[in-house]
Amino acid sequence: MRGILLLTVLFLSSYAGCDQHPATPAPTPQQARTPSSIGEDHPANGQVWRYSYEIVNTFPHDTTAFTQGLVFLDGKLIESTGLNGHSTLREVDLLSGRVLRQVPVPDRYFAEGLAVLGGKAYQLTWKARKGFVYDEATFRLEHEFTYTGEGWGLATDGHWLILSDGTAQIRFLDPATFKVQRTIQVAFGGRPVDQLNELEYIQGEILANVWRTDYVVRIDPSNGAVTGVINFARLLPPADHNTNTDVLNGIAYDSAADRLFVTGKCWPKLFQVRLKRVP
Image 1 (tube, rainbow, N blue to C red):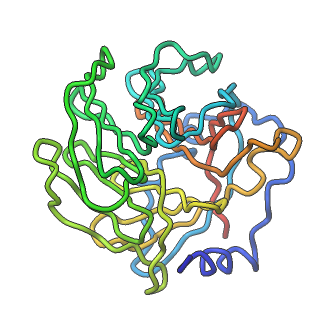
Image 2: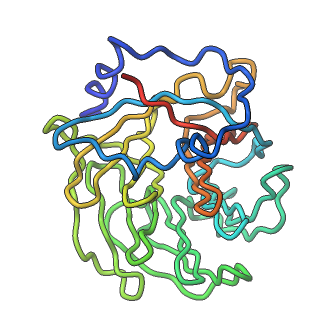
């Protein structure tokens, strides 16, 4: 896993950790912009900023949901869950964690990333090189599309579909033709960062889970440079782990209320977090 060691080293000298999560007081109007508006503060060229976190709110999450994609749009939380025979597209009630509606993905497919654009929900599969397009309002399957390589994460900047495939490469696809328009190579300190998984596009930048780590990287979509690293170590307390608990995976952004949500595969909780820059 090239590049992951570099992410680890970045935190060794000064990361303070998050062993305890005291109740967070109500933020002031100025503070309310700091949890997730990271696109408003850009590091200078070559800088990589470090972040820890605070938990703002905690919500229930379905422990059978092997989270692969997460979207918050127009007050709705939409999730893509994986595993053969268990993959779904679903709408979830944020406050209760209850599944409001869902459609199964055929058993032969392992669903992956999810993005919603122009009233359509786009869902990837892992190794089948096939994606599905649904009507977002009804979850009715409209058609399928193909792509090369594996499908991991999916996001949108409002114009293109942004796809990760487990490598250091991120592709920008035309949502009408699914042809690749351009690619970027994600790098930190001049070295590639691979295992890029779930994606979210927030205020002009891409956030990406790095598979099998506690890290989310902040990526400049113009050139692939990593400009920030967020350490979500111990976000899910040890007491909430069981034999089915899997890795951190799932990033969603509520642009209307400027809320950032994070969860993991088969986690019992979904967290609203505030990012804290580490000096």
